[in-house]
Length: 234
Image 1 (tube, rainbow, N blue to C red):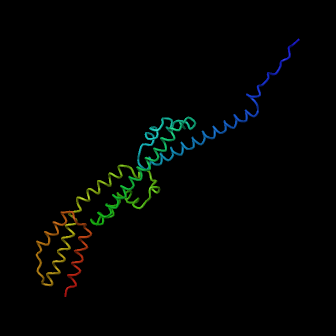
Image 2: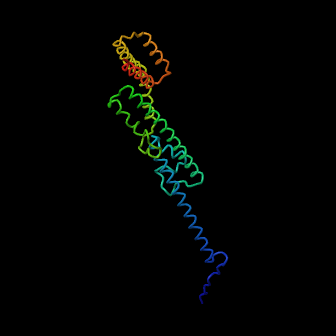
Image 3: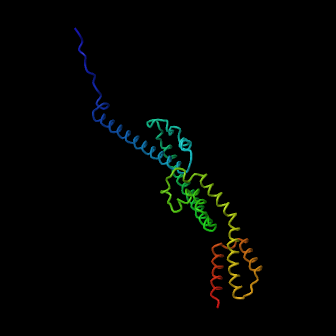
């Protein structure tokens, strides 16, 4: 006669429905935390990607410094979501944002200097065109600069080289303009039969320019005032 199988007695304390529910809730919480962590990681990675693009930096090299699993070739579910990874990512974003801020400030200073020099040199449109990508962000905020490569180091270096080149020509141009104004002033005095020591005046202007202690705009403004007063003489 076949022996009747008896169902094993389940320990109520171990596998009760209440315990199973608790395990299910814990599992859901862990899955939710994992999803939230992964979402944070992907958000950080996306932000770093955009910042690297604007700064002209190697995104892959930058992101894998944090953790090798953040490489784009690694599947989403295999990426590190540890506390350490999240912390490093947040610090990376912070550092890149600060770098972006500093580079934009530097580029805006260079752009302002370039515009002053171009105005002084009476630069043509053709001379300005190659630096449109420098001056276009003159009044932009950090968040408004999103074009890839806009703050790349080679862009800043290009602007620095041009500023240096124009600075070298600046003194010659200032002298040329100042001498034209001085000649105009002397011609007015000559028509009014007023004697002027031309050599001494020119020497004084040249010394002032070469000293670097005067802004071109201030010098020209003062010379224009002299010309205006001379014209008003009876």
